[in-house]
Image (cartoon, rainbow, N blue to C red; front, top):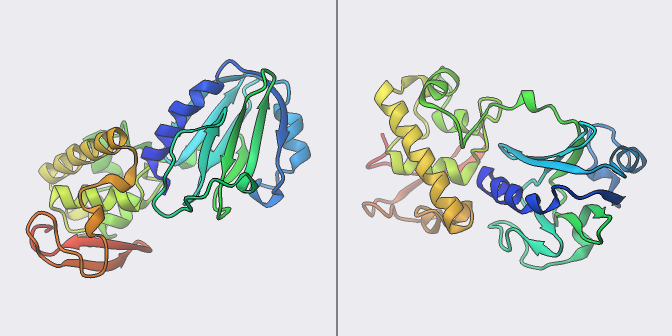
Length: 260
């Protein structure tokens, strides 16, 4: 967390910044600035510029400025976006419920008096200028079956690991992947290249539905599988004890009965 769903929610919140000019920058945590960027450099690059668009690409939120500078915001596991004191999301599954301004790692102050803040308790996110968007795969919200066939359903790598590979499909995190595979009835340890064309179509269909449901319900923590993602949890579909394994470096829950 946050995953692609949360970033899309943040993008919608960041629309409130579009058309507004940046008066000043607060970057109190230099470690949070990536790629060797310094507070002085980011301040010089964006002060006086106007935000012309807010875009989401997977887990990356991009603010386009009027001189073609791009500000890239990443949120790690615990980062939240707050614009004019309005938080797009109040609750993240693995973050603190406290609302502490001491966790503000980056702030754009607008000339009209409002601001945009990235608040991150665990400092796992980051800010960059002109991020390499080409390093990211197709955004999960718009990916098509042929792109999944060509980019995801290939090789002997476990299917779950392929879904988490942001260079192939951008925006799928641990909770989205588990929920999608659980709904689609696909075993996360299967070789990605073993999927049939029908299974690829089913995977994309369920991914789209998961993303739509999570957006509607407020985040990636709202899945039907989520309450059972605990040691000893039972499959909400058939009551089978869920398997708990590490796949692609992430704790994975799946049903041995219906996921094949």
